Image 1 (cartoon, one colour):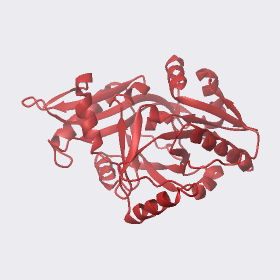
Image 2 (image 1 turned 120 degrees about the vertical axis):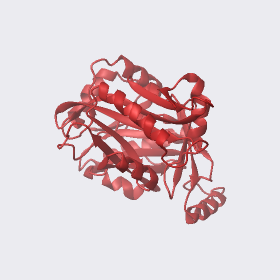
Image 3 (image 1 turned 90 degrees about the vertical axis):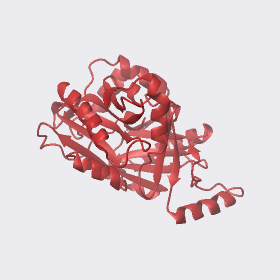
Image 4 (image 1 turned 135 degrees about the horizontal axis):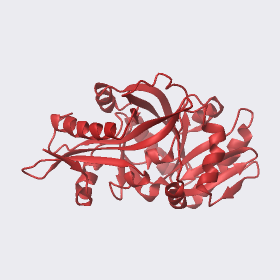
Length: 347
């Protein structure tokens, strides 16, 4: 088997592998990117490896990670965010030796880059991926909650909200650091903001401010649509009932199986206890803007330990919980508590 960097000629095959590699046992999600490389292009230093059968030319699978300097407990560390480990069902059964060799090729290169730990997000009910990660030596170090808010009707905005369509990457990073750098692990370290400025110009829908609270919206649908390939039977039945009744009155959407969904990600919700009315106004404004643009769902990302945002979980339709998995190469004993969410993680 030949282990090599993925090339543009591999795109169609890799997209085919992704189309059958869902996340989750109960509610299974499948991402459909316009190019398999679209997420890799959102990071400056991505390694994306495939394993090619030297006889047939078929690909056994793909693994990918991006090397990122981040802050952990006030110290600069070299982490690697791992966002793809996909096996080709046409050539492999289960976690094959071929996939292990591809993974080792990536791991060796990451260590050459000075990587101290690898981390990634695994859906809580994705038992197979969790098993693979633990066998690779990863352990859970936190939880992220992706709260799904269906966009189906206008919501009254109770307070004045300002919208900003263009932001300066350096100014935003420095402003957000006052909230995140220190209390949160995995805060990204940036020296050159030109790359991030290009991403913000493309993916940032808007920044919203209300009083001393704010949030941002990232349009992940520009490169990727999601569809549900499996869900519990009661959800299917409820969805059928709601779709029939929605002709009469606006109701939350439960997608049909294989229906493509347009999603916006809400991130960098900066607020504090006692400012709930500000946060509520921001989310209402985000909902109304999404409605105007034909968005199906807002995904609001919070850390499990963000007490000031816990109330949001009670208002969402379907919380999707993910474990933050970490594999250390140099001990990172201080890696605990809240972690920062980078919107590129789900791009």
